Every structure is written in structure tokens, then in C-alpha cells.
Length: 297
Image (cartoon, rainbow, N blue to C red; front, side, top):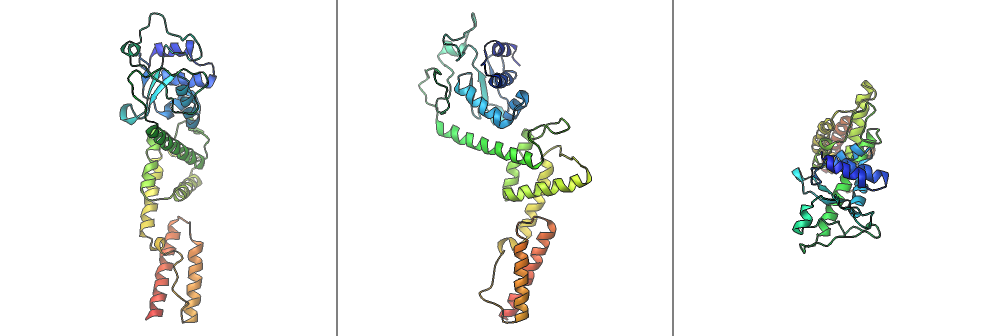
């Protein structure tokens, strides 16, 4: 934590309360030159806002010239932030601290804002880039889309758990960085979002029947169930044969009546992710195959 960065924000930060609070949260991580590598979840937690809200405020701070952001440029691929001390966009005369040296300005490496965003505030001065380089907007835009998608998926899981934020009723946090790391694992298992959601509800309902108000300490608790669901899905031959029908009705009226009943039951089981449903679908498909084989003999 840089006391200097925190003090600068308190004295010179934006007048908007939420923007100042988020900027303080970033400065709380910064070194004496203003650099830091906080996660978006960490910023949101410190500022007491949602992750989506924090993301939007960070963009406004970047567009307004309060911070510089390098996507994925920090440790472990985290975004790198810098509090632009000595720059106060809300004052026309600037706000350089008397006697304070700015190494980047002396070397000609001026920290620039991100001009490709469309939400730059009117009147915001974008300093020149003396290095002559142009920031590539397409990569940043793609990364922002991926980050937004992860944030939306995280919010969906929180809602499935019955939460409207990262703080549980017992005061503990959930949906942290380690929890977010589980989300791509579920997708990699070949499960649709609907299947994932169904498994989350099923696991929570089963556990909360035993322990009301239950919340898992880590989202890896769901991952074990996701793996079981994916394995059952791979074993289930009905997954590739739902709704399959022979070319015409079976010659035996009794066999055809049984086939029709089985096909109807098979359709009713679509979308069910329970182990019993998977087992029953396997039985139905096996019986349908036997009926068709007998008809073709």
C-alpha cells in the first residue's frame, strides 16, 4: 500500500463518490509510483460494489484520465493499473504536486489514457504518445468481452445460490478468484449452461434439505458434481439418439404400441439431469433397439 497514493486520491481524487471510492481501492494496492495488480473482485470488495459495477467505474476512471490500465499486463496475467498522480482531469490547470518528480514525464514516456473507448468525458485531455505507438483496440475489446462474459456468468451462479452479491449471509465472501477458476472447467466438461445450472440447483437443494442455509466454501464443491454429470452424459447412449425413430411403424401392433409409449416417455425425460433419468433413458434406448432389431429379423 502506498500512503502517498492514498493521500493523493483523498486530496485530489474525483468528486463522484463511487469513482473516488474505487480509485481509493486501487490506490490501496499501489506502490509509490502508483502501480498495482489488483483483481476486479478485490477492487469491488474494497469499494463495496458489485464486480460489474466496479468494472464500469474503472472504465470511467480510465477514460477520465485518473488511471492507466494495461489488460493482462501484470503478474499472473492480471491487469496492471496505475494511479496517475500529478494528473487531475477535473482541474484545467492540472494538479502536479509541487516538488514531486514524475520519472515517466522526464523520460518522455507519458502515461496515456485509452482513447478507443466511446465513453470519454467531454473536455478530457488525452496526452500525446511520444513513443509514436498506437494501442491496438481490437485485442483490448476482445479481452473486455471475455471479462464481461465471465463476470455475467459469475453473477448467474451467485443468483442460483440465492445471492445478490459476493457476501454470504454469514459475512463470508464467495465468487472469489479461486471460485472463478472453476467456471471454465465446467465448460470444458462439455456441459451446457442449462445443464450446469440444473446441477447447481440439484446439489444445493439436496444439501440444503439436510443443512438449511448451506453455502459451499469453494465452488470446487460444484465441480465434483459437474464431473459426475459429464461422465453420466458420456455413458448415456440416448444423448445421441433422442427422438430417433425407425423408417415406419413396426409390423407387430403390440410392439408398435410399446415403441410409441417408450418414445413418448423418452421425450418426457429430456432436460432431466438426475442419475435416475439417465438410467431410465439407457433402458428405453436399449429396449427400442431390441424392438427394431426383432422387427428387422
